[in-house]
Image (tube, rainbow, N blue to C red; front, side, top):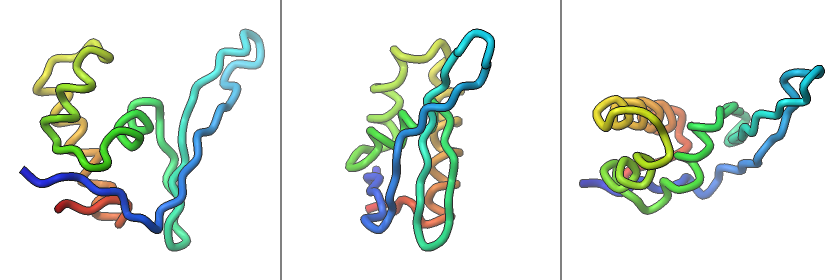
Length: 95
């Protein structure tokens, strides 16, 4: 199974934004930058981005299963969909 590798030209950062001014609830998100492209990440996507480098899809599923209240097949499909979009945009590659 191929390993996922970050594109070394991608810059990223974690963002904290206030989503509800009354309660000051914060959501953590990330932003990826590469070649003039920017991609905003929700918390789930940011978690995948941070741990995917050098791992396989199955290793990601095993790592993330305990953190999310979701069945394994749905998690696998969600991760694969996100990784496919990152690959199409040149943020990751498979080796």
